[in-house]
Length: 323
Length: 282
Image (cartoon, rainbow over all chains, first blue to last red; front, side, top):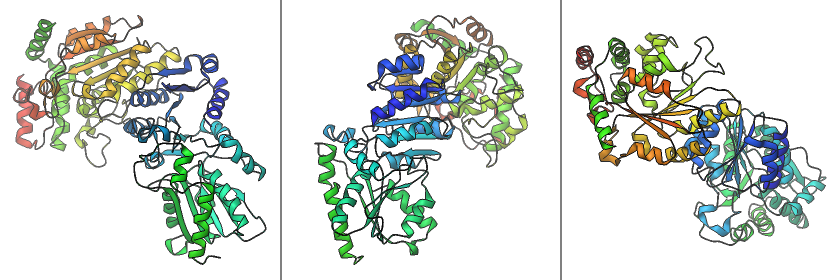
């Protein structure tokens, strides 16, 4: 996912002098090529997120389009006031690339897990938040970030892309668009849908996998991928939710302020609380994580891996007599 | 070092104010008349710095505020807004009458400066933001090969913010010789004397250690300020820092050097009139 992001950026920056990449002491893996293509527009700064965001705002105020490459944790929490005041308030449009988001850096502990970043960034007026689910989506979204007249947070949390990516691709994915939600998988196209998964980031391939497992239990489901939690695609969201018996919203984030919150806010405002189907949320608890291991081991610990999600859905359906 | 510091502190206290400096202070007083409150201290300590910059140094075009060949000025202590409003209205960026609405609900002029006001380059008011924005602007001018300067005024109190020192490292690393850092060193911050809150001395040595070329002046001496700004060498690969020794609330004798007047509420008609008289007598 990171590679796809930087490669796309190199392609974009090759013919567009407005593009600047600032790395906050984070190797991109493409230093040689970036120096060759971007020349002085590739800036390596010390570990100083607050300064870098302010500096990027200054660059943006004079016509540049700065992309800031850094850790999702530090690129959001450490420089929050600069993002709010220097970038968003003053309409100095910057792009924050948050690497290693979610539980990707689980092995390093709570200092390096970004599980409230979407909530933080989503609450800033004028901010666009992107949570792509795989490299394929990153490659499609990146060129669209250039002319987008808002600041953008691009959350990168890779997760065994090729394995899940291919399965989704076989199902013929539409082109990802900023601000557009898309049904990317349906396990039984000819049948009435029992469960609508709404997800983004790594929970999209996991939801697809869960959907596949559920088809074996004769539960028909589909996956609505919302790679832009802000601004959310209200019309697709309402349309899909209105025609569903049960909705499961899944995110690699705490259940405060992330995708589920964004969906529920939009649904209540647009459909009304009386017109909603049964809705369940799958995400991380409102707790600091004091475990290590890996992204997958922590997803496992929180009952969020495909088999576990499928089991939870079967249980919900049974309890609620939805089928 | 200490000798020079003491000399400049003494000079800044002794400095008299000419007619233009007094008149600009009276424009500031128009703001206080309506609001009856505000950041008094820095509104008066920064006047001569701003006056010299706008009268003699900055290149700008009133008819084309976004002129790409303009110099930029960022005022990081955005709460010193009235000083800036006074000079901007004096120069014709907006009408002086606007100050009569200072801090009103629908006024364009708030307690801290915002980019929506004609002539303001950056919204500031939260401490420690201005220098980083200025660095981005200076870098953008370098990349575009535009030979113009970026001036940024910093308050002394905001030196407590880590972002100032992050920015100092970055300015040096990026060899921003088109960047001029001006410090309004009035030695008072929100909760007291800067030396009591957190001693900044030796301030010039701190900036020198970051690789900057440091100049120290009496920040109320118009001639000295002009001479210093004019003489700056801005093509030598280093950042210039001009430490301006100033007096908090300069021009209002009864408020000078008293931390109580960093922010002052309750400026009623009587007090307002006394403040104006104090300026006249100075």
